[in-house]
Image: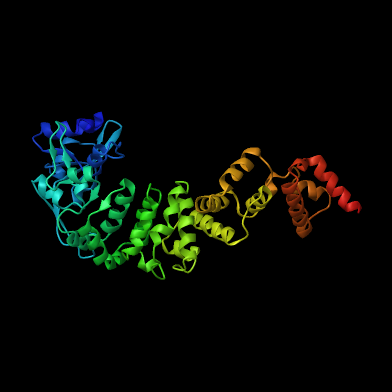
Length: 398
């Protein structure tokens, strides 16, 4: 655990708490990540100090979650969340504890956490506190609930989605009883907002194992978003890992596959029900339309597609096509974009003002621009102002 050396500002917070007689530990995801050889995004601290005592030690701190015992402590220009050891009462809504009780025991605090790999604490002097075997589970690549998984998921239904996300991110196998509890408690997923489902599934999709989305479907967690559960979905999603690691690429590919399997009404309806942002929704919907059309197997066909749908949407379609069918769409798009060849009206060497000066307006102006774009897409070498104006003049004379 020597690699778990936290940055200086975190050490300063830990030492300041300990110098006042309080226990203080790194806890949760940062400890897990360091044990896996990863660099944590955040460093979370738990302590025996009460919230008021934390704020007394750190006068510039921010009581961001003081009711739950969490204080955002500033150390120089940086900050970290420091939380008092706590236990939690019933979860009536299957998402949030009805009340929080501060405790003086670190093990009681770790007992409330979701998975054993997230229930490890580490002190700045190298002491590891691991009462639930999280270290062994990390080494074995197993994701297991702390305590009874039925209880853990009954408390907070979001934990079921988090289990799949962690499994996909780290390539962990979900322990048998934990997976069985997900299946048994999947109906509680109704308590999780569509936005939270979307966020967890998006993190899963951009991991190294996007095909694990199939586990969410097989377990029943996605039932409210699907018409039915397709068979052998994990195999059908095996190509997803070859799709570029961008959220819109993988949402587009996933949604197109689900639509092709007949288990969602449409790409748009599925993603809209997950409250996907408008840009991703447009890209994925456009990509589905492209993929329903003729196969794009020439540079001209790709450029014409770009002229209709734009770069983002066409890239989504190319990612699916190449990953699924070993096509050359990505390379063709890169070549087109690198070359600077025209595929939109804005790239034409003549402008609307040029045509207005020639007497074109209204519908006629739009039609001539469309004609010129089609012409230049097929003959990129003619995209010069002089040549295009000569072409228009010649058309008028005939």
